[in-house]
Length: 366
Image (cartoon, rainbow, N blue to C red):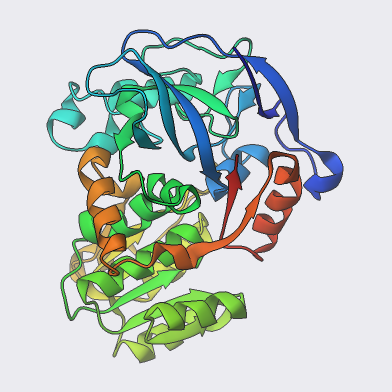
């Protein structure tokens, strides 16, 4: 079949993207699903900094590529056990094979065949169902239809609005998961979140969910700081003068600090704002050339912990339904993250808005 989608053929074109138009809306041939795969009619796909990182070249990928990794849709055709036409699914951007060492240990985010497939721009099987175009993180959700591995799909409640359902595949799973799974924050412990995009505000929602206190929100955009306070942050702090204010608000430093920006400099700030014996969790994806340094003695003398969190250390088939249920119960107000819905032809301008920090989560609707 022929699908219409947003194809990136060259990374690193200059902003504004509304002028340089790195995303080209093209018709691409999509082959039918192979064994263990699904044909999905995409209903919605979120715009994430991980997509922007491919567009600007800070997260290099094989080209050309049909972008979009935070998506939801309806199964039209199934060649996989456990899925049938009509099922509504959220897409996870790491296909978890279930059989490799990390998967056997419950660490689906580190699935080895899944990582290899994502690097190669293929589906989990190693195949490409897009003609002459690579898949993005096994999803390629910026198109009206996609073929995905069943290991990239999680069945979800069909009554969810698609613009909300899409968010659970990346922003919510990554941000809430960083708090619940990676850091395992306990009630009454202090937390600070650096960066209030979709993932950062999801982490803040996770901190509220588990009863962290106080919760400090850090960003440079006043509107995001105001929203953070509405969502349960105790204190909102301008990032340009963050460390001292965080340490004051948390009586010497946060028990848990979350860096969601994808900046080594911000990670150093987060580490400096963490108390002795505390845990600094990094969720953002900086350019591969970036590195960060800390006083090595502090890791021992202050019993510090620095942890990476990819996919929120989640098992998508376990965590996405849990987070959806919490949203439906009013415990996880994910809908507050939605800034706007856009059309396929609006994507370049929408990524300008994302890069400028004027949006939290925009969602492409079909």
